[in-house]
Length: 291
Image (tube, helix red, strand yellow):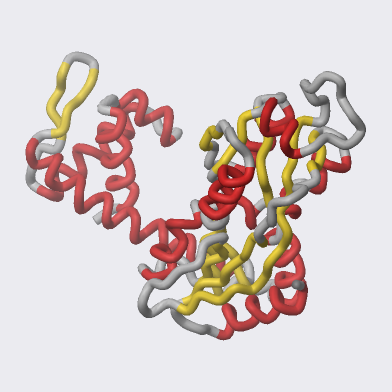
């Protein structure tokens, strides 16, 4: 069966229009028609029926489309694999990583790893921490780098790093008069606390804050990047891992607030694995040498 005919069929099924199919595939419209007719002749069934200027799949066409998708996926994956081998890649490392780690530590770790492992192709999937263990467990990722501990049976979860967290508020405070050193109580009385941007420490932090101060107004914002943007805009304050704040603090877009009487936790980074391979072992060794 001609692969080109199959690709034309799958594309035509998506757009339901032979003219649009010809534009997407850089073919003439008569060529698209010939591909479809040849495929129908080989299968012995009609795949499309006309509907005005468009086409619709027949019942046979809908059934065959499922198999055509599978065939084309296998072909494309095979071609991609051969191309990787041609370019010198013979191994792949797939990493599932939280957004926070992906934007802070991971680029440095990868750069160092690739210096001595240029034959390895790395695929990176950025996911929320609560989804990473599942990806590793299902075999969709070789390594998970998460901000959340996992007790999934069959997985090894190792805490590889801890860092301090900081209380941060807008740099231009909406407090009158503005003192050089602003207390946490003044911040709490003025701003809303942006919470739940980290999967582990918020419950204990909120409990201590509410036991210490009479009123703490909160707003849940799950993404660190959005939390920082909200702080810069003067919407609220938050508690974030120090590694995520270096640029904003240096550029005076946000300010650190002394925690006074409350105890701040540490933010942890976890390495999650199911199986060891020579590549995962080398990557883990690289990380541990750098932290």
